[in-house]
Image (tube, rainbow, N blue to C red; front, side, top):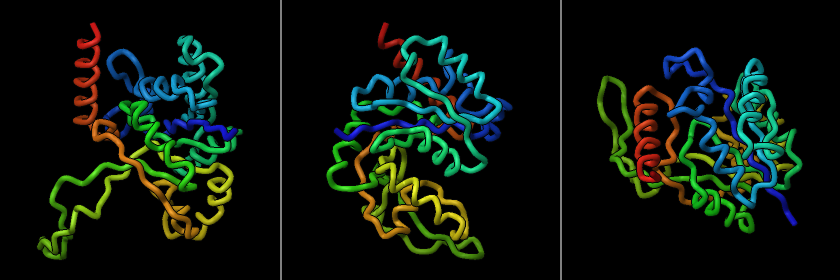
Length: 232
């Protein structure tokens, strides 16, 4: 039976949040941001093992954090990330023995079981599946001189997020092409696209947004507080 591991990528800095602490370790209502998505993947019965990727100088901090939470015992391993996102993902993949890997941003704390299930349902159809949400805003191109260009048909657009699902062996082999790319890929699905492989999509959840700015963090705090109050 095919196995699936989760790789939680939390090796980014917290510079845009105004923190010296790496983003995944920034406090979100009493827990580091990484706690929330990590818990969701660990508790999913289709995930065999979860691999947390953190900055090299945060390995001990991560191990200490995991040791203080019994729900993660024996279910989460830690590895060091790289200077680029793809390097962090590759390091995580090399620690996995799964046939499939789910790649998720630690900075997206509100991933749900339903979103994970939606991605996994596409395993029989694609070797790579991304999570997406519909574009709801009017989108236009821009031109020089501050002038707007044409309006883009938003019905053909997708806001890409995570988790993203990959057949692990293909993903590992796909990293070799990066040296020939003009710039590093913003996600690993681009590598499959460059290989001519079809990329599937499943519907995600707009609430599963990525914390990037101070405003995002404030929204996340409000969401956690509301959820906590509702559970009391």
